Length: 329
Image (cartoon, rainbow, N blue to C red; front, side):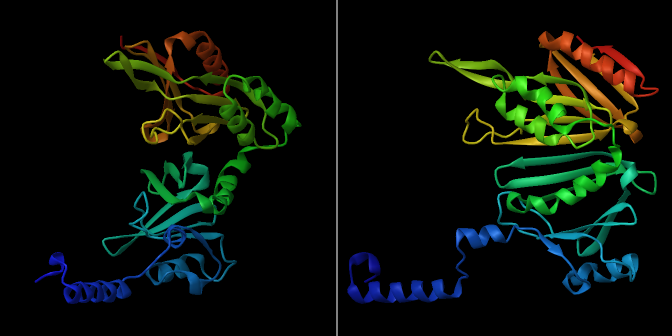
């Protein structure tokens, strides 16, 4: 007789086998599992993983130890991530990774970075760097990490953004106050915009594009929507273009969005601006960067007047800044 018949002896034996198997399994709490996805600062050569140590030692030499962060490999987290070592050496951003057990090094001079994207959706955060590497080839690298450790990556953003900002005599609070009128319109983006301005930057123009949704289908009279434009705000300062948008994913089908994506583009990297009138009353604005890289944003045709004003200011700042108007309707 087996355990399913109610035999007490069989039940006890099955229970013992189950308990013995459980003892061999690593028991991790939810907090411990989450910690496996945390990045950490590396402060000595001994803490550098063996796979990277020879390359790291040969490149950095015996000088001051660079600011260095290690992101762990963690397949069980919500978004799989591979281990990466990130640091700045001689004004270049370096990212070490392993691909098929081979060391892969991505390096780009900070002055050659075309844009930086930083995103946060609940516990999932990332930073993406895109620019022209030393070999003249466009390259991009993305680093994922638990949002709990996002403070470790702020020094990299500051290292890239702050050299762009010179003392202009602008008052930080006065520049941040330019977004206060958004409080009753979009409180979230008001705070995002205020928080992204660096001391010394002067806000020259900005444009808010609300979310646009269209009815996809109706079921028993109930409408189901498709998002055609994510809410975003474009901010033009005297040093950079900053685009802040909602994240693309939604949680449990809810229209509430729990994070944001920040894109920072140095004005000196913009080589062209194109505007394309598309179908469905949409306008595509493409910011051209070196080596055919680009950053795109969608606007509603109803926002055209404000968009033209914004682009006129941008056009005046970027030289020679070819401006293209493409009709695709």
